[in-house]
Length: 182
Image (tube, rainbow, N blue to C red):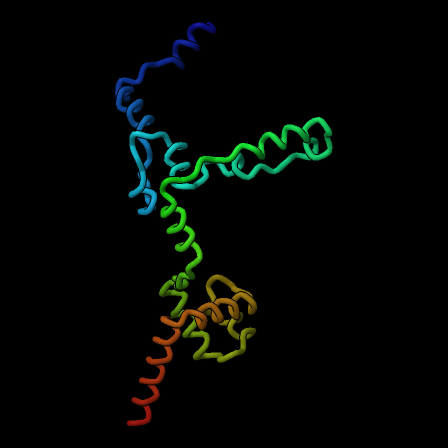
């Protein structure tokens, strides 16, 4: 009976192309960073490429955090000195690391946006109740049963997004102008 169950589990899958799977496993992943992609040499290994660019393939090996045992033990003092004398090879493609550092240090604009239903919700609540968050929490359009603090936070997020909030203020200004002319 045990042999019968074993044979039933071990079925050959005819629809799986083993050769294609093997090739796919050997293929390197696509490099999304343009700086690294430009400097990449397909003839070298990953470790060699990263060393040439002055980047770390394994940060745990690059910046070793000593364990407590290593810090306390007197035997390992000599081992640490030997590790410090080894210097990594000088990178040939320094411009890659410099470009990545420059990109990381530059401040990017926030791309936070609220969804259209959330914007409509905030506008409705602000126009109907002003700053009365407790009344907003009791409103029938508060479908998600947000608390007053959650509503205040959502409205503050809406106000902190200049693109969406300024569009609301402009539309509100146009409505008041139309009302004044009539």
